Structure formats: C-alpha cells, structure tokens
Length: 162
Image 1 (tube, helix red, strand yellow):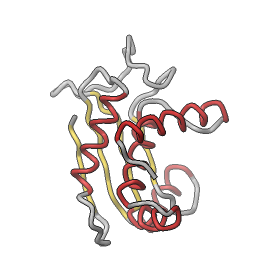
Image 2 (cartoon, one colour):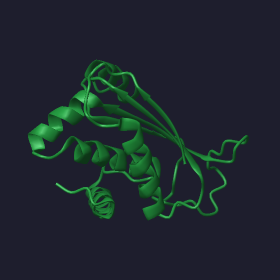
Image 3 (cartoon, helix red, strand yellow):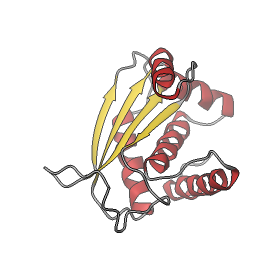
Image 4 (cartoon, helix red, strand yellow):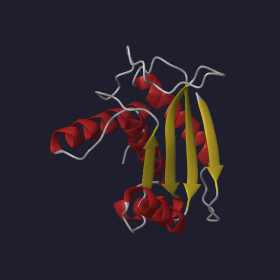
C-alpha cells in the first residue's frame, strides 16, 4: 500500500498521523481482502480549507470532519473482480483508490464531544473514508446500515474501541 500523506494543518496533537494512517489503512484493506496493491492520498487540514473543498466539490457551505474522493465506481462495495474500469497506475500497477481529507480540528473536537480518544476518532474517520473509496455509501438507509456494520467490524478488528 502506497500512502501519499500530507499534514498542512498548523494544529499540534500527540498522534503520529502518518504512521497511524498507514497502519489503519493497511489493516483495513487486509481485513476487506482487497486483492490489489493500492495507493491512497491523505491530506490533514483545518476547518477553513475543508469548508472550501466541501463547498467546491459538494456545494455544501460548511466545514465537515472528512471528505472522500474515490477514483473508481463500483457496482457493489468491494467489487474488484472483473472490473475493467478500475483506475490502475500504469507505471507501478497499483489501484488508485482515491483521496481522503481529514479536518484535524474536527477530530480533536469530536473526540472530546464523544468522550473517546483522538486515536479512536482519527482511525474511525480513516476507516469510514476507506469504505467510501471502495464503494460504500450511506445515502439510503439500507446502505447506511451496511456501511456502519462494516465500520464496526473493522474497528473491532483494529481493536480500537470507544
């Protein structure tokens, strides 16, 4: 797994964001039995920047905790077989999953609000985004239930609980 990581926020925290992200993404992909080597981009930013991105790409004029930008369309979540339209880097043969943008300010605030650790909140947002990058969504109730169950399975597998 190739992780392109950047932390452009100026806010300090006691986490090693890159190491944790690499570990969480790798273990999530292993749990899901993703059959290909992948590349993921992760940007850590602040409320102002993520609000601008949310407005530009989703036409929602507010900050959010995380944004996911999948590179591939899937008929069903985790559908990697016989998908001729997957975006593969021709030079290195990795599946380009997409981009994740996490708002560090929201991670800190939500961890405090929900009464759990920064690690738990950060890992949860990464897992949530990886699921989006491989075809999960939560727009309709049936999909939301499926995605939430998958998130819980992965968080338990990672042994990162509330």
